[in-house]
Image (cartoon, rainbow, N blue to C red):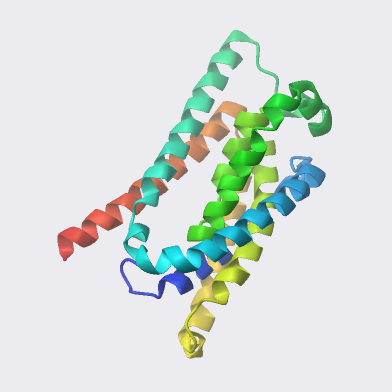
Amino acid sequence: MFVFFGFDLYLTLFISLLVDCGNALVMVLKSHPHRLVDIKFGLMVSAYVLIWIAIGIGLGTMFIPQHQEMFRGAAGFLIIVFGILFVFRGYRLRLKINAGTHEPAAALESPEAHRRRLGICRSRLLYPAAAAMGLQTGLIGIGGGMGHAVILMVCLSYPTLMATGTAMLITFCATLFAAGGIFLQIPAGIFYNTFLFLLIPLMVAMSMLGTRIGAKISYSLADDQVNYFIGGIVIIAGVLAVWQKFLLQYVC
């Protein structure tokens, strides 16, 4: 919307955050019955992250107006890196499965017991990483769900679906809060356009439908295949984000 159709950047970020928020809600509702959301810990991390989002929103009022060109595709490279991490994780899980040393996610202990076993030092690495994700959510309006999932996998060794479900709870709280902050910065008069009242709910609804379909596919896959599936989708999204920037430069 921002690159090709010239939407106001703050409006674009607001819509993007609403889409992330809707997707996160669908995933939480889908994951919770499978006991793949660490609710208590997720809400605690969410409260911590909201502090950094508020700081990021404040800094964004000074950063975004002077750096709008940054939003024309640079974030795609970071998304590709996240996708590669998921593919690599899937490869490692496949090696463990072939060696007979991998336990299915359903056989793992409770999240609380799992965190106690890891020890304090490693789990504390989560907090600076979560702060950085919250800061960038407020600063540049990116939901950070994929980042939170990677943080939970790296810092707490959560299985992929548990990390994703808990990360979506954090993302739901984070994007709902950030969307409110970004909304206040949208120029006056934009929402007088009736077209937007149809476009925004439609985009959110279609994305939520895609999340529902994606979740159904994920729960039908083996642990290593889940990582390949997520990694592949994320890499494609990152490539498209980078491609649109170069395409725009070529057309112009």
